[in-house]
Length: 419
Image 1 (tube, rainbow, N blue to C red):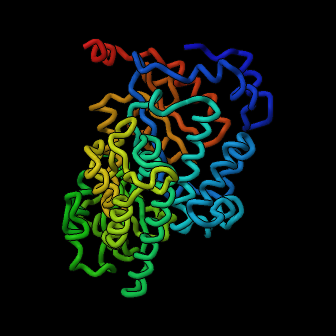
Image 2: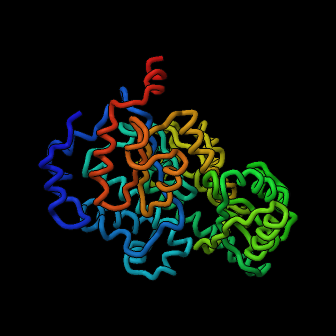
């Protein structure tokens, strides 16, 4: 592996604030070659993608300015496959408009893949050569499937659009039929309270196992439903459902647990990962069983298995086992609890992943991962680190960090590698 030439780094910083130099980052031969890393002796590495809530108006601007050819080509492709000018909503729409589920979900997913394409096309940085696992937080799972080679981008962006519309329609139907206000609330507590908190909530809502949300709540009117949508970390979960019912549940927790967790209303127009989303499951399952929409591949299945690298499911916190398993779990992902904490613990503790790179808008995913594995940058663990690429100005530091930790392992990983 070649090291980053000092002159290259200097030229990259002298162009304009926040934008890397096209000369230093794309044209330089050292830049083209230095990021094709060998997997021979590096620590295991995961790439992860964010979910809904990280969208912001204008989030494409820095990529259009820094890498106009790749960004514009990808944006044209995005607009073509969603069937309308989504890029204009991302760039010039109101925050309220972009936050709507049917716009936010394809916008976040598309922006994440745009950033990944910049790395692939402008830096010769391939997923299969540099990563061992891929995963995504909720909606981010679709970007992870694209990165892992399970679904083509053209198919995935169409799938996400249809899924988002089905989820929005499910919410509209519940409001029309039952009234009430629906959404999501994050509950933040101390780590020692998390398990008792989850136990109290499961007792309150009447179920605890993954896979039975829809069945266990069919007899309960939507206006009375509250479910755990996410288990994000050792001190944070997200509740989803009727807002008034969530308030009642929080009061119940304070009374019977003797604890006062912080409750934060999230910017979501739908109660994701709750039984209200059940109609969307059938929509996604039907789409996943269709043929690919990619020209020249119309006779092939939309889903390819295996992919280039293992992809970890939100529903199980473990890699997809086969094509049918992937279709089933991805279909149910809008209904089931996002087991993000389980996913990170599995990769960290069982698979010994030591390097983590977040790709996409916002830093929520990077912060969640960094907190759980106890790392920021490359300074905390030998051969490890947690990084994120949300802006072009971050690319050089992340790629430098990955190169600096290539061929470096902590002592325990060295023993495991030798065995």
